[in-house]
Image (cartoon, rainbow over all chains, first blue to last red; front, side, top):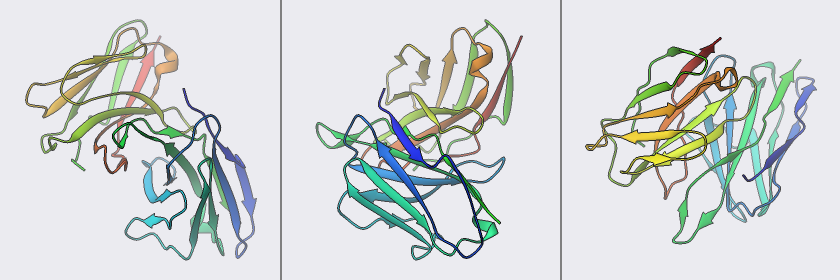
Length: 119
Length: 110
């Protein structure tokens, strides 16, 4: 199956600093990438949808100025957590899909996740 | 996206079939039923999806009722490595957005 990688796999940063997380599709071109956040013992929460070359669409309640998403190429999307605070500590997961045939998205391929700890 | 309802947890004996139910009574005609699973501290893994017909792949089988209001994921011979949270999602392919519910925690026991 298709492979999606994330870097870094874990990161610790100080409160007030910014952190960038990369999501790459290794063997396919991802027309759409998604970013999720998962707190301990909770389900995944969709944060935003990004299409290559266009602005990301954020879900209700997600601050677009705090979580900057860039999808500059068909194989790379980045999520930057700006001015991070301890409450931003979470497991961040990306996924990627490609549009086939008649514009239908089927499987999404998920990255392994990035664990962010803000101290 | 249609809301789905799953039992919070289930146990299954190793080597036996695991049958995971999902209710999606408000599913729309253009929404597929997707199943993903998440092993602890990893990204979700795609298992299978279907629209109307039953589907089978190397991992599992998906049985969808004729009225499409419910479905069952079947892992034919569960192993300890199948212990995970299983998510049933109803999603329209033109949005691509997967809205995860709480899922079913499947514990496979020796």
